[in-house]
Image (cartoon, rainbow, N blue to C red; front, side, top):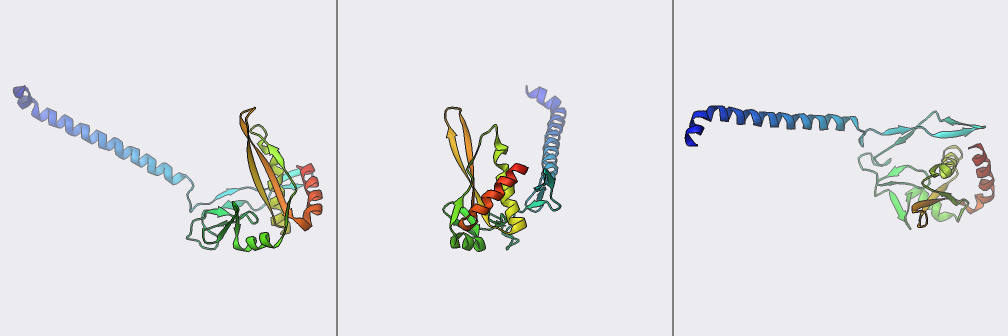
Length: 194
């Protein structure tokens, strides 16, 4: 065996070096692929844009200005966001967001929440087969805020349906008590357009 190693030492070393270089090349290639695919994915510094749907007469049209998802507080550009306000839907850092009974508000809209009595005007049930059934509520809430500056907020409650083995959600729109009658009628008209 010693004689075999002595006679073939150079080819064995060359083979091992070649094997090491191939393994290193493979690792460099994999690392390069990982880095280039990571650059193409959205990051915290590249916000995503999503179109907002707006009902107009009997159609739904795209808004001129898309919604931009931000990953940093709107007041502190270097602070990562930890959540969004239920009323204005802007994102805020931990210092700017108020947590109250599992609800999140910016400081300004927490005052709005605290200064009014709120009433739930919807309780729309959705299932895994019908997730779009409550979409009109979110669109209506966004329309109220963006176009009319009327504060409202949506709460979603979940329930396990044991019989059918799925989770159902109940989407609840909450409005100021003074706005209940007016907004209930508006919501019915809005839903009819949807």
